[in-house]
Length: 322
Image 1 (tube, one colour):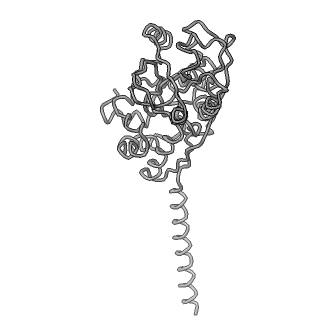
Image 2 (cartoon, rainbow, N blue to C red; image 1 turned 90 degrees about the vertical axis):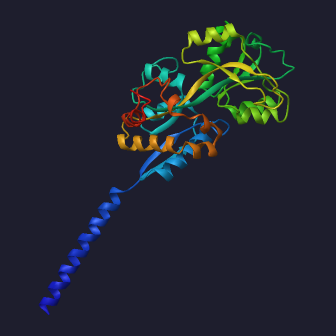
Image 3 (cartoon, one colour; image 1 turned 135 degrees about the vertical axis):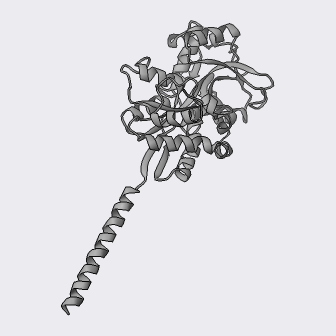
């Protein structure tokens, strides 16, 4: 009987040990939970970010990324800096301002590193054909949707009117999201509204499906002044037929959408995320049209902050970063 009890005791101890080991192994494999801060429902950031999150979750082991609706660039930068989000999509100009403590950022936000430049974000000023607005100078006395409060779009609007010698004192700015601007424009409560986003933009498509619109084209000399004064802006041509009844090209400027990450995220995690993003670019392009514009060559151009070591390691392996 004593021998039987002894054998039973040993078996119980071995079983407990195995369970304990299994529990520790399970704990060690617990997924890394990550928030990807995106933007509003009518912009490009949220659907594009959601498509990226699905790739990360299906292609990277032990990672669970949630795409979160936000107020876009400026909010996203502060979330990442405060470690309330690990990843974010942000405009390159706002990233530059945040890292260097300019514009809306009174203090530098140091906890920001880059993963990749994603695609161009085009500055698009929408007006009604009967508004009498033929250039930005004609915005005097008009009611204009300038973007959400403190957003990158709102900063872009101030950059635009600056080169025309205007300020908010001579017009009526309305601080609205893309969707809110579109709704108010359709109701004739706005004379114009600005969108900084990938093309085509859903808010502009929504409006153009119901009424005629014009997207203002900028004169060459104004584009030159903009790009000289604000080096993060680049000239951009919107192809004809991007929007309904748009028969001619539109000359404007663009910033870039960038994917950033907090420096506290482990190198291997960021390396695997970066690798998954580029090795599944075709899948991303199927999920969202902006995925077509993602390339290794452009991903490392124009990033205004240091690359995260994990992203840098991947790009060096691919030979696109020294």
